[in-house]
Length: 591
Image 1: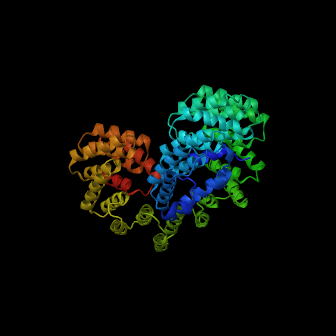
Image 2: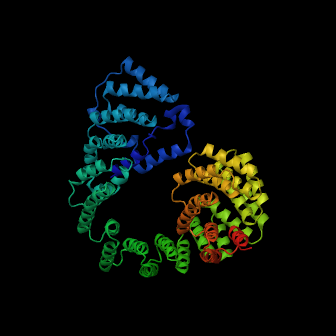
Image 3: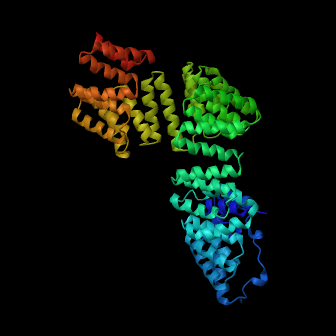
């Protein structure tokens, strides 16, 4: 028996694409994208709802003569459909459905309206379909999907109720997915009440209690969420998914309580992999890293044939800085043919970088051959290549990488500039960004980066021009205001305007330590040492960045607190002994 309620989920998520065959869509359909054709194919194959599925007792069809008016409407509707005039096609088929009272015409009208993205017309047609053939589950699932999509949950309830009852063997699966189906509705309280009503008829079904618990959680009814998940577990005590979810619910109130629950559950059901994974993650979050490591090792020893578990172990072991376990588990996932091998190679490469194994990192980055991580992996490879002294090879690699969008093109330009910046080639950095802006005029990230590059080579007029243009384009860009204000303050220019610019940056990003540092610095430059020290201390408390340390130390030094200044500088030099701004500040003040 077909799982009709799951077909409903597919229809709900893809309402814009009805099942209209290519020949019925005419020239416009022939030009439709391959993605749309794929979606339509998936609806047919996965939901298994097609013309051949819809059967009706012909003796129950209305006796309707083929009048000239009906024939005219039919021909006009089909011709409009052939020519891509969907508005006319929808209106004519709605009229035909009303005139003939034929469920097949109503079904056709709902499909055309869906295809045209006329949701209200589709709902009207589906309602007629249900009226003309009240026993059709296809009709009810289409109408229910429309009503849910339009936010009319109360109206959808009786149809969902009948669909749930129609296939008792699949009701549990339907309850497990109903929250996903309703996730687009912003009224979580209304969704919760709908699922409660649907579940009321199934007090012995654990999946019904699970669904109510989830809906309660989303709507902020945490006590009900706890009670209902406990009810689900009482009906099915060994249900890993419910146990893992209950632990997450308990965690909101008390991490200790959630840990106790997981520990007790695992004593009774030690083979519960999903719960052990959730338990390990919770232990990490709660700072119980030794216990978390024990759980991960246990999982690794017992689940050697499960690639998904190996990946989960690898990611969590990284959080524990247990890079040996990370490497072993992720390599085991590769041996088990984990489908997203590129993601694993990328993560392994990051681990090898963290452990200073540059050659292994580079080899792993080269194994990332597809997907969203391909460009980042090749950029990291090029960066490591440059760090090994092969700067031109690194640049050539980046320049040859494929880019399919302006965003990717800009990302590659910025990556090349960063490699050159790290090599100290500031004039070349400016040149690369300048050429990039010729290809991508007014691209915000390139404007910002060129402004910083201009600052390094003494092209203040370019810095000022680029940052002012960036503020025009992106008036909510806090870093543009900050950089322009700081550049004035650093040069002792237009200090009142610098203060105004940086205050605007603070307004846009109040917790950014670098902007706070700029505010402290401009106050210092204006002679307000106490206010400057206040903001610099606040910035340094958030981030011990060497340049913040240089500024804070300078203000302390000028105030006569040389010992405090030297302590801050010494600590910063231990972290970054080659920082130019810090070294220049110390030399200047101590000479």
